[in-house]
Image (cartoon, rainbow, N blue to C red; front, side):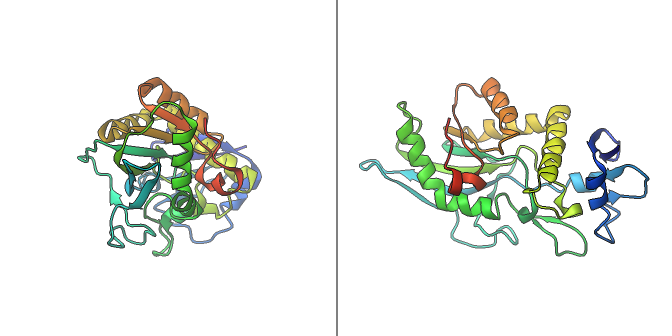
Length: 265
């Protein structure tokens, strides 16, 4: 049995089978500043990879119209490419940012579309939800929010404007796709992503702390837990324990919104 060992201090490790182990060796000329494959049984992922974080961002502004039952959603900015290579006009959610009215969409961690792989055998973070996830958020967000408003008798949102913020609790590529290039539709690699994510979520307290600090700074009127299915209960439990006074809704991951609906709870 082999392990993927994460971090220069080798603090985190995930057990893998032989088939996954072999996939990491199919791509030649790995960047040795990010990964060390010079061991018989174990794969070492270096801090430089873990530190490649995709930032949390503000993507849309949503307005609830006072005299109608409709809502309006627009890009937060008209100017493109504030964040290089992003498909959206995002604003960075910086440490000093404080917001009064917001809606937070919680995902899990960035995958392949959230990084630029073209830079000399390296990966450059872009912005959250760039691929199908981003398209589904853009195309289905209004429908989702209308469903939330209509499905819940209490007033989850009041008339006014809200910033739509997208957050990854763990901001590096826990799927490790850059190294193996296998789709998450492959059960074994989806499970690998989940195991890496869970290892960091449960063993490194900074990720929970960072999520908490981000949510406190943006003071969301509504939190939507849209984390992927196997990891969603972990995020949900944390949110219920620490943000029980907030309007908290769980949904399917945005990648499933088109075919499976929203799964609101």
